[in-house]
Amino acid sequence: MAALQLEVFETGDPRAEAAPVDAAAEEARLAAYEQGYGAGWEDAMAAQAADQARLKADLARNLQALGFTFHEARVHVLRAVEPLLVEVVTHLLPALAREALAPLVLEVLMPLAEEMAERPLTLVLNPAARPAVEALLGEATGLPLTLVEEPTLGEGQVHLRTGGTETRIDLDRAIAEIAAALRGFFDPTELERRHG
Image (cartoon, rainbow, N blue to C red; front, top):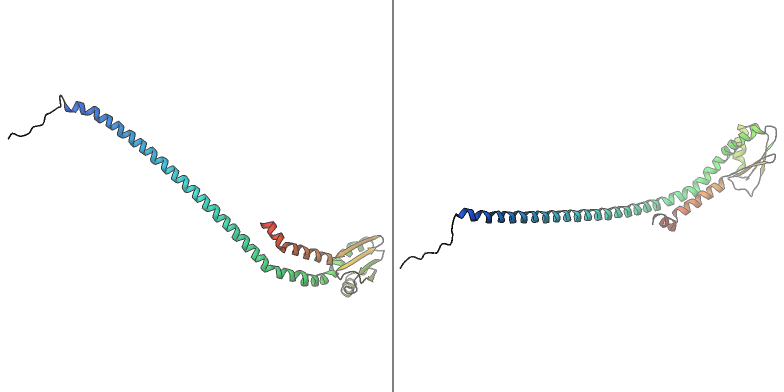
């Protein structure tokens, strides 16, 4: 049997025909590469944008949680301090006001005394405040003073009269205003209104 032989269809230089086919293949390969590169770049940019959006959302959530934590801690601290401040306003401030009344009267009285050296000054005060005020004024001034007790005045109230002028010292009212401000500050509806 004779060996099988295949028919050859090539004609001419095999390199001449292969070169144009290789150039077209190279162009197709480059176009595919560019297309793949562009698609990869777009995917990378989309992934980066998604990561940034996720990070921004995480940051916003964390900041919001931190804000709530701060608010809760602040409210807790204020609630813990409230009894102390109430005690200070209701017990300590009135005692301090009683002690400060006489020096405050003297402080207000001295400029008036210099202006009205010849006219007598009248101090209207609560009988309970008289000893402290009288002792301090007796030591500090040689002014002609008339002390008039008025039981309707609070222990922290004094009226200084000279001629047609009257000056009022009202520590009781100041303490009441401080207490009202403190109650308003610690009122739960007020705290929620201020801090959401």
